[in-house]
Length: 378
Image (cartoon, rainbow, N blue to C red):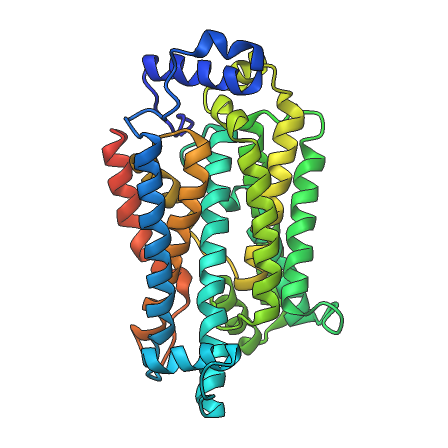
């Protein structure tokens, strides 16, 4: 399926194209004065501001409530005291309870928010760059490469002393993306070739992962890797959260800077080129940034599916297709979605914890079918 994810009408197309031209070429702004600043579907600046306030408020509430959810109960008072003790305005909690809140729950919930935002934004970017409504952050084969890197560390102990599972997964993700770009070096980065080559590279690394696991014969290692592949926030710690948050902030700023180019890509490479965009260079930049962001997410928590696939489609219904609004709202929606999904994974089968990727798939499948039906493709 290669339909554009934005599904703009002819009138929307002309309006959006003129708006992009005004952004990219200051001289064209006079000719585009009749084009409204708001994205299609009637979203004004005030309505977007109101939605952003609702989004940030919902994210804050989600984080606070999610910290309380788990096999061990935590009250709002305990949460306030834990934070207050670090600000010097409250008595500290007992060490065990304080460690549960501050060293385990809070970084875990914040990691879910950061990863959810990363995956949703990467999905929105790739859907525009490839003009494929089914594109998600793992389209480039990065998740399979990360899986191979993690397997080599856990099963064969390659680089175990210096890299660890997270480092091995990150290196594997970068290697897989490097192979993808090597194979695409002469193709002009055509969207169809990017999709097909990404599938091929992903299947190659998936085969290597399966081969290593079968050759090892270690049932415990296979079980551990399988659990990791489904995604989990259980290993989140402050150091990893801070690194991911910094990378996320920088990466999201870069892709937001290319919002106008992404709008143009949604109408095809020819439209983008006609507006003065260097198509090849811009595609390389966006693919590199999304691969880096996805690599960080997968290396930190494993491969979590459907977030980058369904969240951008849902957000388009709310704010329209223009990426200047779509990207930040996708980040907010992805963060809220994964925070609540992780909370559900913690308590649904307590005391046993289910990998969060299982629940994103269970929730994501019916939601995506609903999106396809709304788009008239089902």
